[in-house]
Length: 156
Image (cartoon, rainbow, N blue to C red; front, side, top):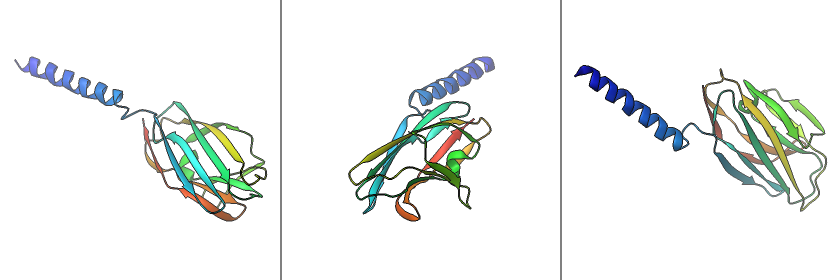
């Protein structure tokens, strides 16, 4: 009798886990967030939940409302901490980190009315477990244009 209840309990837990996976609780469905300012707008499409070891893509769309002399994507440290950046397309004109460890990708000037789409391929390391800030900002040189506040949850 006791073995029957153990088997039923195990099958119930397995069923709940499978239903949660099908509902994309652990998945990599991309979410789109947008922010804008007077000089332009920024949109990011990336999963808010990722599993360790898997690759995923971030799509960053920069739209210029006025000429941007040095459009710069600022990725919060959570994007790169215990995460491998495989590729960035198009290639930035320059990259650096700031004092807080945020990754700054600077692109060539962008004329008013133009749009730049940047694709970044990431791979989450299996030891990177938990919730991380994954904010994204658009700067023009040192001027902040738009900021998107987001978090990313990494599963083992």
